[in-house]
Amino acid sequence: MVLDIRNAAFADVEAVATIHVESWRAAYAGIFPERFLKDLSVQKRSIYWQQALRDGKPQLLVACEGPAVVGWIAFGPCRDSDKDGNWAEIEAVYVAPDAWGTGVGRRLTHSASDLLLGAGYSFLALWVLEQNFRARAFYERNGFNADDPSKKQIQIGGVSLTELRYHCALPGIETVSYPVIR
Image 1 (tube, helix red, strand yellow):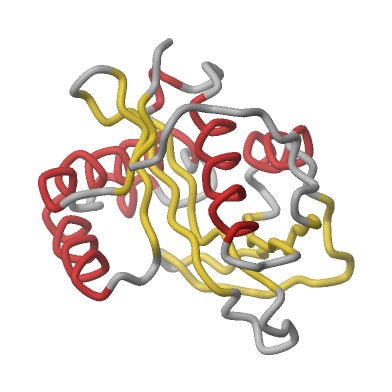
Image 2 (tube, rainbow, N blue to C red):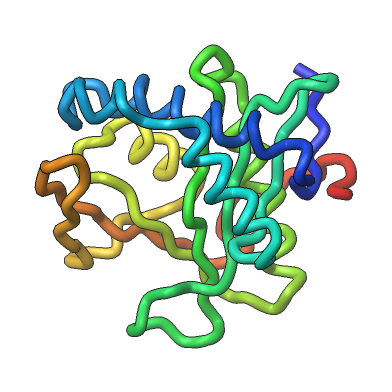
């Protein structure tokens, strides 16, 4: 798979929102109620991502195979009050379900990490649902460790869930040289 990793543009918003919704439906089946997942809206996610791009927060990279967006990563300064200015955060990584296991998520994570390291960050944190074993395994394969005992309870879709914080030192993620981020 030949990928181009670049900064997201407004023209990418619908694809980003579609991947967001499709990934939630695939990854969280059995975790969130079926009705909640069915009611997820590409239109509402598009509005959110349009505003995020306008604000520049979080930073958003997309992975493209040819003209098609196949994944994205959102990241920026860490939002956790117990972390200082040396910490960055991956807010979300989503890959189209038909591209899972192809290296898209790894490439996005490496690209974001390279940018964050270049911006002067030393550490990287993220939150992941305790029940999302696939994502947890992905992060662990890519150099992240559980930040025991950092947990928090969240309410989404009428369900109470636990999120775990993972972390790594930069460049603790296996660094591989990839082509240009534009």
